[in-house]
Image (tube, rainbow, N blue to C red; front, side):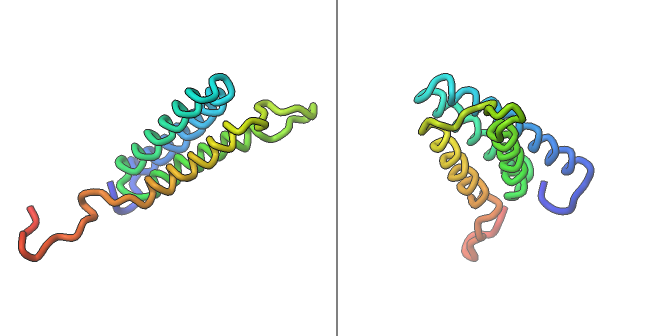
Length: 127
């Protein structure tokens, strides 16, 4: 699905943005509830979102839309409310590990090369 912006591609990118917000919000809740297992579960969900976006769109833009949604969820849930308290606290090490791990996964998925990106050998013609 690489190329120009078509209505279908725009719909996929907006869907990835919404999926990033939902995955980010669910990840923040799970990391707070079950520390070691919740962190692994949240990072696996992010990896699935980022890799799925990369495969669906064919470029790093799919990963970028998921990352934007994930970061919007972080901003919405981590900013203090008008009453002075936080919706979700970021006091534990799990939240920092979730942010760092998610950033590493995003960079990893955005920079990976697919089978179509590999150079074709001169000795073997492409199929």
